[in-house]
Amino acid sequence: MEPPSHPARPRTTAPLRRRPLRALETAMVGLGVVTGLAFPPVVALTGTAPWSAVSAPGFVVVCVAAGVAVGAANAGLVRLVLVRHLRALGVQVRLVEQAAGWATTTGDDAPLHAADLRLPEHADDALGTVPASLNALVGTVARGVRERARLEAELRHRATHDALTGLARRGHLVDLLDRALADAAAPRPAVLFVDLDDFKAVNDVHGHHAGDAVLRAVAERLHDVLAPGDVPSRFGGDEFVVLVADGDLERARDAVARVWERPVHVAGAALAVAGSCGGVRARPGELSADAVLQRADARMYACKQARRQGAQAPVAAR
Image 1 (spheres, rainbow, N blue to C red):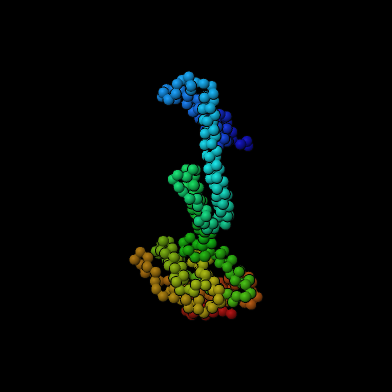
Image 2 (cartoon, rainbow, N blue to C red):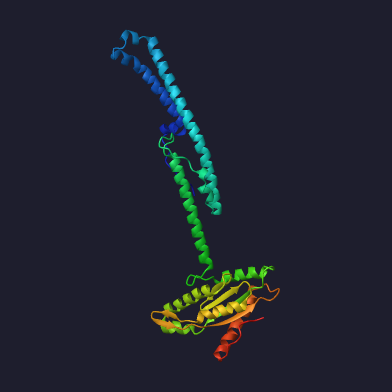
């Protein structure tokens, strides 16, 4: 596909746009010539000198030469000032470009807040509003980098955490367990599988909004009772899995038991919550997260079956 065509710029403005300093110098010298030519009539009209004197070719040439000299001097002074400012501005633009490139690539906007990246703003600056505009651009880039980092973090969190409960998703927990199993220097991790009892009855009797409220309440309580290093996750439906990084399964089991101590209040109704737990520790040399989870799942179902038969099966495992 051909790129879209754009109308050509007017040729009459090209030299001015391409060489602004040269055009300014030409204009100032031209103004000097005009001033030199206008000087003799002005002198004659004011009566300072007779027309016969000011109309002499030599006097006119001197006036024009003086006007050209003054115009050229002014143009040179302007060029000197502008070039100095433009060179400083060019260095600053390159610094901004480097800092913006770093911030965009890494998400770290700290270089954009460096003091030497800001141009001083003066009302009588030869470049007018250019320093303020460049400083505003730096601020805009910094805000854009921060916003992008925030959005990326939010997307990562959404990809790894359950939307309803805020707990880790199944895939995220499996990744964390795989890493814990591969770390030979760390303690062998443990896994606690938790399944809510009679959760279907909550949905059937009180509605799915009540079931969602129970799931959120259980998730919040897990966060409250577990140790900072433990990772609770929602495995799906009414199943939760806790990764116990330090392997202290007894501590994690006792903590989860506190989740069932009080009911969940939904729309004026107090809903009792309970769950069956099954926990296992990773065996020496065991590197498969799926194998550990399968053993914990089997232990949890054995516990649930035992509870249905009126007995509480032990949670701790080999």
